[in-house]
Image 1 (tube, one colour):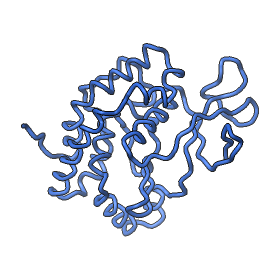
Image 2 (cartoon, helix red, strand yellow):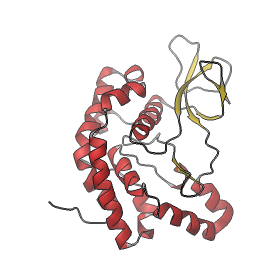
Image 3 (cartoon, one colour):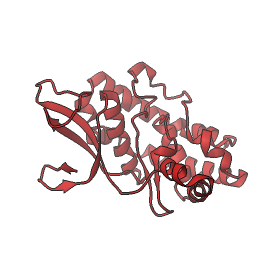
Image 4 (cartoon, rainbow, N blue to C red):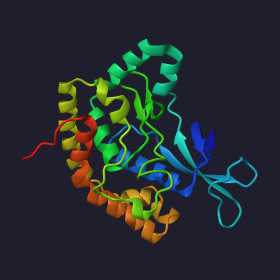
Length: 239
């Protein structure tokens, strides 16, 4: 439970993160929601000194710590359900995910933001109409990135390729690859400058680090179709 500025209360997941992970979560959520992807509502939280055991992002004035807060959508993650129900549950849920209309978009999104950690625990799923993307602390190349790590051309680890791509048929891979390429045109229209403001990146990072993130995102768009299709194991289409 957390308190909003208007004094209303919400159920949420609170995370004590380092500054890069906090920025990763806030910015990835802002970008995903701008693109219409199912990302729970994010908040930049504040824990007054002595109220929680937070320690990662203390304020300079000593009054407390910053936290990442994500709306609790009340949906279990895929890994939890697989661990509880075994292979049959995994097969059912993976089939739902394989048929999800936005799966190709997810391959493109993770390629764009260099999300290196989309494992089964970072997808909430409870049927085709209730799928959520969470936990983006390892986006933008990782949880401890520095500006020099942000190479817009480089292929970074794409976790979907490790546990989901092999379960897709050749036809599904091709379809998702086409979807990813189309979604890249939508990504290109995202107002990155506004997302940086919405994600509080300009307030949490130095001007040079914030600019490095913006440059990375804007320059990486043109490489998204290739990285997404590589993760899907299908050849790049040449016009």
